[in-house]
Amino acid sequence: MTCDSGGDRIPESLREPLAHAGWRNTFAGVDAVISSPASRLSLPLVDRDAHFASRIIAEHAGCELIANPFRADLVDVGRSVHHRNLFAPAIRKLPAKIRKSILSEIRTPYRDAVRRRVSGMLLEFPYVVHLSIRTFAARSASGQWQRGDVGLLYDPGRADELDWCLDLSDELYFAMPDLRVRRNHPGRGTNDSLTKAMRKHFYDVHYLGVEVVLNRAWAARPVRRRREVLRVLANAIREVTPEATPQAA
Image 1 (cartoon, helix red, strand yellow):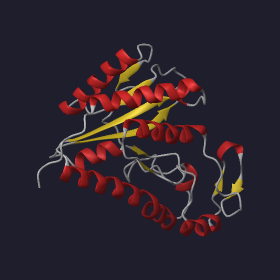
Image 2 (tube, rainbow, N blue to C red; image 1 turned 180 degrees about the vertical axis):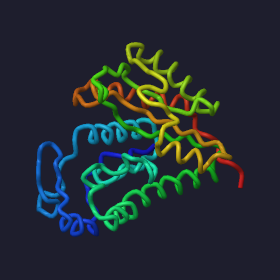
Image 3 (cartoon, rainbow, N blue to C red; image 1 turned 90 degrees about the horizontal axis):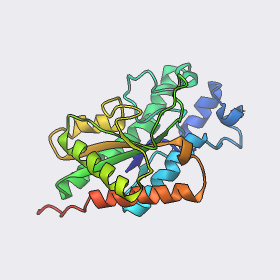
Image 4 (cartoon, one colour; image 1 turned 45 degrees about the vertical axis):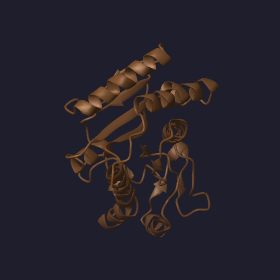
């Protein structure tokens, strides 16, 4: 299990270059130079919610979690290097040297860690299910309501991913019928993402990459019901993903 966003750190090696370049934090209406004592400012709820949810799900599902510890406004580690939204507008205005440093200090180590872990598990087990956890806004950028509580984004051309998502949908329906689970909504599993990149890398083995996206309408509410839904989701993941028998050496 991975979580691309949710961290609040800035690499020590980038603090001075970012401050010198005049990059400023504007999260939550705050405007502070990152070299100030309060440089570790809270991220927006969207990121904290994804990180919180991934920790709860991983704990109850018995999954290993790899979470990006660094701030999401520096670089979107889930994007390919040529994606237009790899950097936020403020970062795109900075010198190329700083942008390259951000990639080498944050994006590359994170993606390498995920790749190494999947590779190691595939040497030991016949298949690996990789779940990438994030949240989505209840309203789209155009103002349209994005219906659904949980989205499962996968590649419909990969039978294993399709079957796994169908099984999880069924399991969740029986466990919590009022939870609205939608497949490939509000996005598509074939869109630019970490799971898509991993599919290309592990194209010839049994790798399943699925994005599990949670509607912020409920995932951002710190109430007991939220924990209950996350536990149900974790239990369903565990039920449809029985632990594989290690392969013989």
